[in-house]
Amino acid sequence: MAITAAMVKELREMTGAGMMDCKKALAETDGDMDAAVEVLRKSGAAKAEKKASRIAAEGITRTAANDNTAVVVEVNSETDFVAKNAEFTGLVNDILTSIMNGNPETVEDALKLTVNGETVEDLIINKTAKIGEKLSLRRFAKLTKCDNEVFGSYIHGGRIAVLTVLEGTNEEVAKHVSMQAASMRPSYVRISDVPEEVVAREAEVLKEQAMNEGKPAEIAEKMVQGRIQKFYKEICLAEQPFIKDGDVSVAKYVANNGGEILKMV
Image (cartoon, rainbow, N blue to C red; front, top):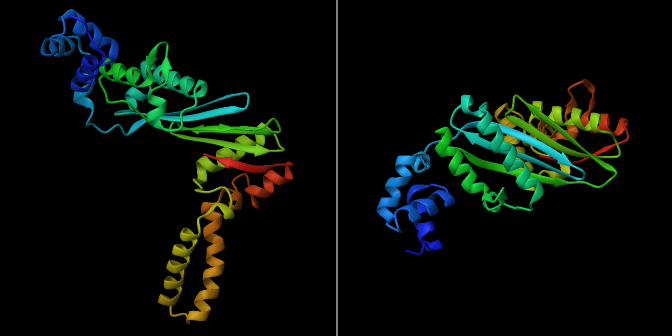
């Protein structure tokens, strides 16, 4: 019996097994769907289906750079033990390479990329079956730079990864900026990046706090302006006190080294 793409798709949806495993099972059973399901279950290829509803909250982050392109990925597992497994780290490296070589804009796009003739999605499904835990590509970012710019990357404990792009300085400065971001967790690079609604919401909270302290409305307004500046120092990378020298901001540290912060993930 001729095995069609529709049959393979149906079997994959039923079992969560990889495309090649489904093709082989259908060929072995002459297209008998129920029998093919049993073949996959016996071989262990259908294990991934049972794990689809589990929570993959552990995992690792990785970065890579090649010329003017850099990628950061987060791939999740269920346990920290598996996150240290060579099979898992190999999977992460394959995903990282596929994104570096492709142009995905979303996770869905990335899952369709191929590694040695196998899609990233199938690779994850097959590794899930082999390792015995739910694995998933959670998120990624791909950055580009110009020749007069540098990447900075830093990974803390395998779990927190930062990529930055700086102009006019060197990789050591960029790495220090990435270390700052990993430590202090800023949400934005600079004040102008903060959405107006975020500032307005914070200002309203700060005003209420001041008035609850018994301050008149006009005094509360003035207090808000000062406290908003403190808020910026918490959420904006450029405004934060530099962790290696608290007397200067991160922006000032970079400027003292001839540079400017452009991007951060």
